[in-house]
Length: 316
Image (tube, rainbow, N blue to C red; front, side, top):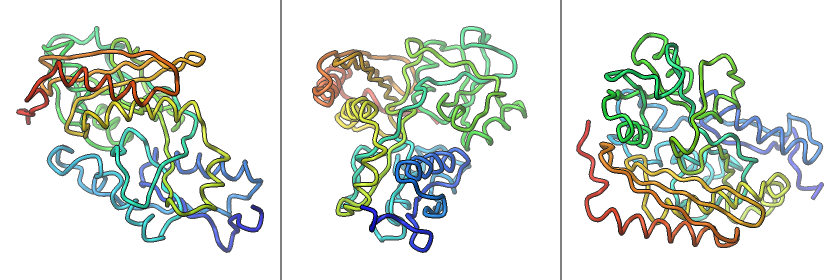
């Protein structure tokens, strides 16, 4: 496909949010594509697109919409031809893409674990009753209050750097970040301790980068196939099938993780009441090819156990 590769005069335009982490992910995508095809960096253009979720920082996510807050404007540009591909953190992605767009390329998955971050304490168990935890994640809020109901949880919006500054300013005793984000940013100096998934099951697709394209763009499809990581796809597709059946959004505390072991896939999932008063968990194991079906089946089991009104939100 030499004649269709991007050139400095006609670069491949990579759309992304503008946070340092989003830019790091876009640069990783660019570098992998450049390496796969022996192209200089000048053959790619990083296009920063401001999204609603980044523009509005003074209100909880549940007040301004669902997961589309971090993707809507980027996908509109992709559909309009303003960019050629879009790079996303898969944990921010709605389970359905707009008509004409699809995600069939994933980069190798990073560390899936949450990171406990504090200047004073090393782990969740060390927190005294009444400690203030900062997080904007309803999943983390619900998991914490389920395991440690004596903690106080406050809203903590912003990118990694913003949240670390709030922590340093004493707004909270601790917060949580994705270990994957800290690794991708090279932030080894942050006082972070990874949390075992047995103690805090991560967000669906945490640590995974997905690359979205127009469904009819065969040139881009061929390029992305060269950097696609199949094991990541197998894991993420099982997790997202679980999420899709649950109709998950930023307003719903849902956690899940798929792990590969040879030709077997092991999937664990959890749903929680938003106030943390109840958690329902389950698991499935089977052939890798059956991952999405296992995700759907596990979700049906947890929905049946949860009953009506389980996800109703009455907090602030």
